[in-house]
Length: 500
View 1 (cartoon, rainbow, N blue to C red):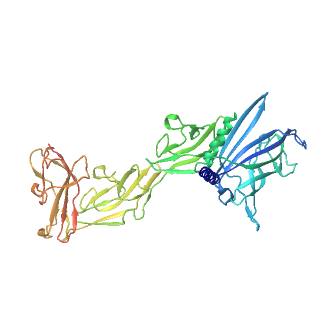
View 2 (cartoon, helix red, strand yellow):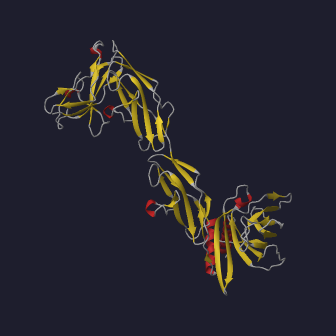
View 3 (cartoon, rainbow, N blue to C red):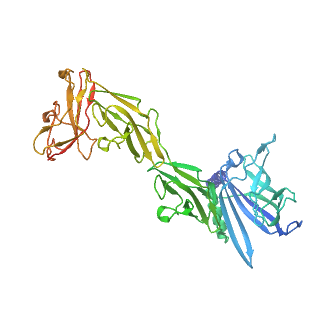
């Protein structure tokens, strides 16, 4: 028998400890209201509504940063001889959050306010003062809601503790009530909420539809890159049942096929249907609709990253090359369009005039000496680089190409023919130069592989044919020459095709 008693006592302690994790107050308050012609106030209009509620919260309710609790209010409404029982749930309840004052005797008292249930006079933001006592645990055990008079008028002629103008209807309410602690089996706020909801359902209550409330709205502005995506969303509280959504772009409802009826909406940069424009969302239940603010989505412009513009000067020697390019911020998701200029003239497409990278070659007529700039265009507009002054000095005795390879070369089908050019400055000691030829497939132009020495890969010249089946057939060829001091020069990429 002793064993059973001890076990029972231990279980009771566990339950008590668990229950201390949440606190539930069962509250009742009464509204006494009146609708009357303007200027008429009746001192005792009689009771028109009684509302009961469960307030569920944890220890943080008495701190400076209270966590969200739950408020379940329930009521009996009689209309046309029929009584309906409904309840609502507010899951972000933070109204009881006043100062916590401790006395020398250890007693505590909290002060704050609770949202008032104004069913007749729908006073926006109405609150009702309360006071209460707490035990050593810090959570309230008993609250008393002080009488508060709300007057709603259509003119400023009346005064009182609370005077709110809501339009044509005059209404006055007196609120009073109290709340005391009750026990639940649950140890968490969601668990206690589910337990109390189950109690209400067993008593014949049904959950009433509640209008959505947007607690976190859309940003005022949003910039999206071409090809980039951003998700638009709002945070909705107190909506029951699950609300429906309708997104609008430039005032027009977006179709479901484009995601216009989903809780979130994906904006895609430069897309004509889901790109730049003004957006808002309407969130609805049968109890009402919440309309978000408007966000203006714009195309995100590019700027040059730090040190990302063209260099002011680009010195070349002989027929050596240099690659001109810029670095953009942010890095492009979808490539913008590029147009290079040499002086006032556009650089031809055949030599890379519309490429992100422009290869300039000393001595080449199409590029070579001159002032270069690039214009980069996206849906946000055009960004213009600074000028790069390309100069070319004679090879002299420097390690340099005197003749570069061509950008394109049509090789005879079966007759081995040297790729023209690739001539290293003959006044530089040839014995001190090593060469390596590379080849990349035409359909994979960056995948260069060194050509073996036995296939002529380290020779001064390289022979190609137009036969696609041959190892030295069509493709993209590149020569890299290295001096005895490890200086490196690279030829232009030569696209070899089948000739006649």
